[in-house]
Length: 209
Image (cartoon, rainbow, N blue to C red; front, side):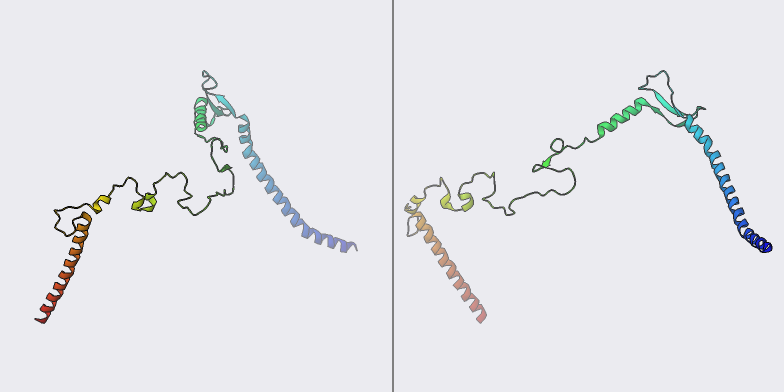
C-alpha cells in the first residue's frame, strides 16, 4: 500500500513540478519587467512633481511679465509665455469671434419663425399663379395701355374736317382730301392689275417665238 502511494505521489510530483517551476519563472520575468518600468518612471515622476511656473523677468509687473515651466534643476520645459502677449492674442480671438446667435436680435427670422436649430422651415408662397389683377403695388395705367384701341386715347385731334375739306388744286375727280386719297389708291390698284396683264402677255409672246 505504501509503495503504491509513493508511486502515485511521485507521478503527481513529476507532472506538477514543471508547471510550478514555469509559473515561478514567469513571475520572476514579470517582476523584473515591473522593476525596470518603475525605475524608468521614478525620475520622471520626480521631475513632474518638481515642475513649477517661474517668473523670468522679475522686474516686470505680473500682468506683463514672462513665465517659464522649470524643474528643480532650472531646466525649462516648453516655451516661455509672456502674459501681455498672451492677453493680446486672447483679445484678438475674442474680437474675431462670432457672438452667440439670438433669434430676432442678431439674426433675422422668417415670417416670425426662428431659423436657429435643426429641421426645415415651411415657407408659404401663396398662389402659384400670378396674374395682372393680383399684382400689388402696380402703378395706374390709362385704358389704352392695355387695350391698344385708338378710341381709348384721350386728347386726340379732330379729324372730322378732313372728310369734307375740299382742295380744287387736286387733279382727282373727288376734290376732298380723303376722297382724293381713296381715288388715287384705286387708280394704283388698277395700274398694278394692268401691269400684271401686260407681263403675262409678254411672257406668252416670248414663249411662242
